[in-house]
Each structure stands twice: as structure tokens, then as C-alpha cells.
Figure (cartoon, rainbow, N blue to C red):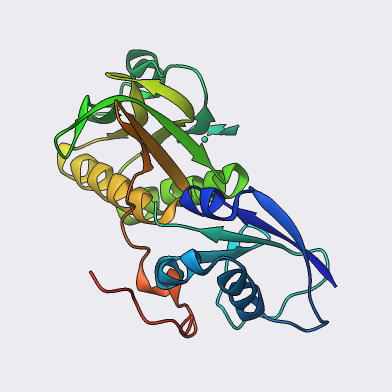
Length: 242
């Protein structure tokens, strides 16, 4: 059977392509995909314990069986959309207007509107940053962002959420991600906003490459939550030494 394997962020650089078509025996599991690319590209091996895996845009365990035509995403630690009366979720490539998004979300019944902007800074660990470049597994990222919005509205006493992430090249001072939370009271709005950005950074497949005066690197992502990396077990490779 044939499956399609997608690579993102630093994985794309290591294997030299963003996707491959892989031939596997019928009934093979995701573990066979990991083993194949670990043997073909040994530099992938230390990264395996920190990867999340998707099958057809849903997170999956390494022992999940595959079927012909499946699309497998290998996702290193880490924007289309929907719009309704409880906010918007979008991935964009143009500059984000915070004022416009805030004005669009607020309603007379809201007593609080909390805004978080992730902004491109001019330095990282003492190195001067020139610009950033963001990429995503876009269809899956949107699903995860929509899920975050729904969970936030369910778990916190808030009315609406707008969540916008930008892709492509971003200059210093530009907004990469915007979260606006509207609610009757400030406490739940602050709590929901903090939860959304912290969870987004760990679970949504979006990556950034940092460009410096002396080179470029993929930014280290926060580890995926344990239930995503190993939903039903382990990948079977020991973590690399720090």
C-alpha cells in the first residue's frame, strides 16, 4: 500500500523534502514509518521521542495501523478559518490588525476584552534577529485552533474568542499571533487568554524559523503534551541527552 508522509519545520530540512510517497506492506503501523525514516536519515532519531504524529489530520499513536492513501504527518514541537457569533479562527499571510479584530469582536454586553499579541522581537538568546518565517500544517492547525476556541468557551465563563495566526515572513515588531477574549468579567477573560496561548504553543502544528545575521535555525518548540506524543504507548526511542 502507498501512504503520503508530510514533514514540517526542522524535519523538512533534515530529510530534504516536505513530503514523500512511501510503499508499505498491508497492515503496517505508524511505527514502520518512523523506523524507515530513522534508518534513512539517522539525524531524525534523537528527535523521535519529541514528535507528535497525525493520520489524516488527527493525532495518532505509533501503533495505529495504516491504510492505503493515508496521510501521515510528522510534527516537531511547536494559519483559511471559521467565523461565527462567538468569534473567529483564521490563518493569514497579511499583517494582523489588532484594533480591527478587537472592534469586530466586542459587544455591548461584554465587560472585558483581553488581548494578547505575540510580536516578533529583534533578538534571541543574544543573537540579533533579522526576521522570522512561519509555516504550518495548515488544515490540521486550523482544526486544532478551532478546538482551542471551543474548549476555552466551554471551560471558562467567556462569550467569544478570536484567534488569528500569521504565516510567512514576518518583520521585527509585526504580530505573529493574536488572541482576543470577550466576556462579562475580566477574571475568566484573563484566564482563558493565558490558557489558549500556552496550549497553542504546545499543540498546534505551527513552526518558526529564525533568521540571524550569521545564519538561520528552526526555533526550539515546547514539548508536546504526553498524551499527544504517546497516546497509547511510546515511540520506542530513548530521549536524547540534554
